[in-house]
Length: 289
Image (cartoon, rainbow, N blue to C red; front, side, top):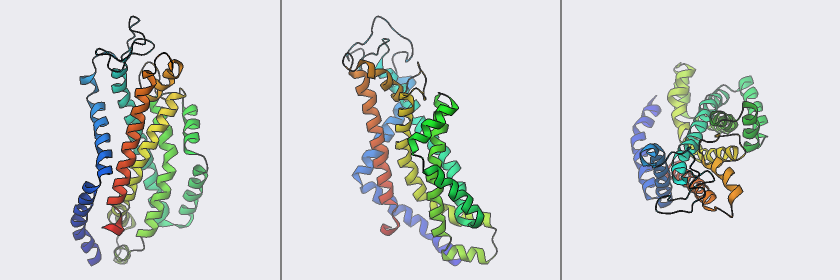
């Protein structure tokens, strides 16, 4: 118990070092800035948008960017800038919600597998390995096709496809942490397993899970864009960056701005989450703290 108390006392100092190290990482701050910008855009979309994102206007079909239509218009005369704003909501929601689903499924199974071992570990590990044998995007496409084309089903499909990553990561971290002296001490004084898992093991496996979740959001956004591009995600006329690219592919020569802006947005938000994840990994590296 003394070791556990010492660990608790050291946590505030460790957090302070992590924050200082993160603040010194220019790439991480740049990534955090990109993510914060797109999150703000998604939240404020109803206030920023000046046009209806789904209402067509046949007098403004495929207009080039101008003072009125900053990003031009699409094949139905809808303002691309407005659809980009609302599309940010769909794409970011898909990334965050699908990863949340993956974490809520993966972490509990990973904790059970790593802590109890035996037949529980065998069943969960073999099932996880079978799922990981299927490429992430292929698995997501198959699940989305089975569930039916919609944004909510796409998020469920992506979340289920990403869950094995968190099961394997959590299991590996638990196997490492459960042999520590403070866990052995808690077990020796008769604390129940659920208390040991929640109080002593889970807090120590959160940092790598947080890093993986940040990086997986980037993959989930790409997966949602891919599913929408294939017609399995957000359904017309509601906008998402992937569905906008699906339409824009037919007008690459006549209206290149239709593909340029959603493609650039996907590139930037994925870059932002990857830089943020790398920065968190460097800041939370136990060898440096």
